[in-house]
Image 1 (cartoon, helix red, strand yellow):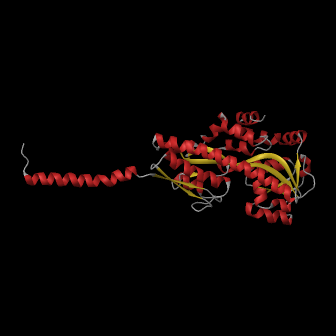
Image 2: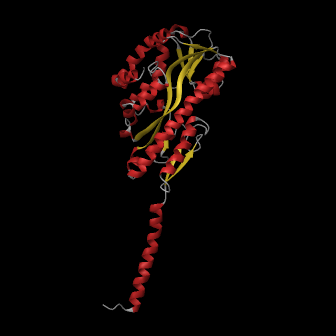
Image 3: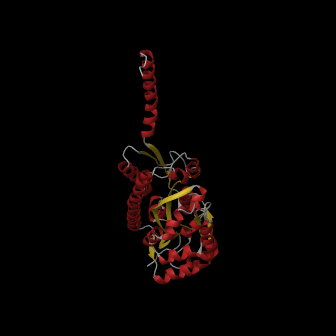
Length: 336
């Protein structure tokens, strides 16, 4: 069939227009996925460094496919808003402290139970095991999927008194706590008085005697100078302050399999990297506190730890129904 020259020009022009119209669509399809990671601490912290390592690894594993943008120090969202922002899809990754998730699952309170884990290695074993991994997926029905645990460290107990080795040494004392039902029950079981208080107010409260003591990681105690206004720090390792890296479950499920695989691998490697930094920070800051000589560090004997653990059994019992005996048993088995 012979095509009239005029019609040939129209067909050619139409094809050119269609081709031109398709170009922006193709460009959009090939543009990298923007992945925003928001957190509330400074870049030089273990969490900040793990976040940057995740960006580096993800972009290396998925060249041209993802653009990871990290927003430290609450630049994008603060503590109170980040979970809501994640569920709305305004950010793709956040790393809140574990205690923030108890409104989504009470099982997460296993990490707040006092004297459950012997040390950070036991925490690692539990988190890598079946029950720890189950917890990462325990909030999918609420729209949240956990991808990894990032360490802050083990908690130590401090007071303005000379002796701090047995449970009876804290009876009647006032302790600052984070907002947590488990932590409140912990100090009430010891006959102490828990006081909920913002982190930023703790130094002055210790200095002026508004509270007698507090619990925190070595790195937090050192960076906030709590050791300068406390007489004694007991090396209790009685609890853990960690973070869970979470993503929007629906967004994650919508990713191409190769992108999910690359991001999962990057997160696993960044987690190992960041947790090593956190462990190093705590060891270094413990030494700095010891060298400063202002607060006395007391080590606990096995008998001391057994006495503390015995005194905490009613707290474990109180929250066993919400947490699950299977999780508590798995945590205990992670101790060696």
